[in-house]
Length: 142
Length: 479
Image (cartoon, rainbow over the protein chains, first blue to last red):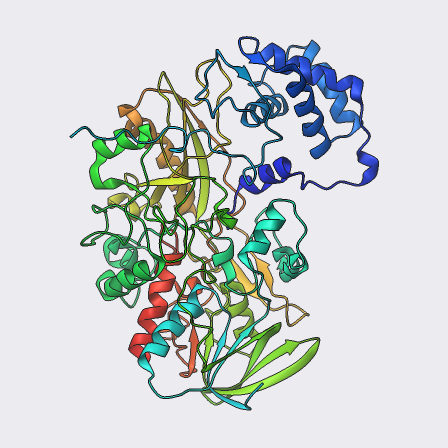
């Protein structure tokens, strides 16, 4: 029962962080800064554009989504806050990558990165980017 | 109830009760009247999975939040557990290392606390039996004495695991696990989904998927929604079990009584019954866990299995235990610890460091004004544990010198470890403990108190396999 930070993360990924409706005030114009942050941090990857926007919508709709939080993203962008400086920025980028086929195709930078749906370990085809499902053991030669 | 008198009354349907009943039914050939009382309901795995997947389930109302079941005085400390059929087998992560032989001899070897009244060798046969019943996956070479293969092969190593195993031999092993590495006995092979509390492919052992068929035995009458809160005593015997069902109080008479609820509720039942043993409810707690993130230079940590992949014993045993706690390294192949620097996404390993703690009198269970809801008072960690953390921070860089480590990042201790221990400790007499080595109460000789509550000391290892083996031992030596 472990027990774990996992529960919190799973809550985020599965949309189980239920908040009062009043807090679900969306601010679409501000979400563009979250989109820009993703492009900025992952500028060396080919990101499928519609997928990035859909991800940001899903991310904000399923997690803590109030006006103050949205305002922060504008600040993050203009102050050039990096994932190492902010847990929120780190989580935004991390969950984007986990929500795509990037890891399933072994972090191949040459491919277009496609959004598969907001990361949910119960729904993702291969949710663990480290696992033997992606990197199977090499067969020993006889 | 079918009867007004039972030969055996068992409280709870988790690991402790289920393994006890397994052995009891084997030993008793005569027909017995057996009553099992569970405070919760049967919430099937398939329905739990629906809830996790965000789908509607007619069973979702059956989940009783642990926060509502106790009064937790220290909000910074959490005690998650699962109530209902199968107990914590529905939410455990399937980690099943044995204890080390030294864990049973803490006083003799290190001058710390008390020795257990039984040792590793006494439990050895029951460890094998429990491992067989759970179809454990594990390696042939282990740091604790064990002969032969586990029922299933070990899970695969990550790149980091391979190097550490080559460096430290059987002090770094694929974790013995109740997560099946191959399809077995109605369970699928682990898919490395890393959501082991409710396994998406039902690879993890639970009471529900165990195929032990205990609760289908015609001698057993299983009653759900019956919460035991106290016992009626007569001299040095327990005569009746008191419980609430559908909001009404009931009592039932039994010859032998078995408390197999979790340690918090076992203690509450005893204290409500007026147990005057000075150790009852005391020395409650659990191990301390904290995460270390290991940033690797030019090395992907790929190829492993699910979340908990390996165990390291490099900080476990030794003379240091005279002064500070053993530490079990639990290698986490967790999806959430990735890096974002270009080309380094998977250049990361993460260790969960598990430290033993001591059964302190300052941490205890006591009844509240509501007989059904115990009060949990947890105020401190031992200095022994805290020194263990400091030692780990000094030693870990050297231990990892065989790896291309860029940096180590120590995270704050977790608020819970999911290993609830203590409250009814085991010992040689009532002067040092609540139960004897068969987990029979020193005073009430027809009362068994099972589970991790009976541990004399905490160990740094995960408790479930040991408490299951203890249940087999107890029933085998008592009937």
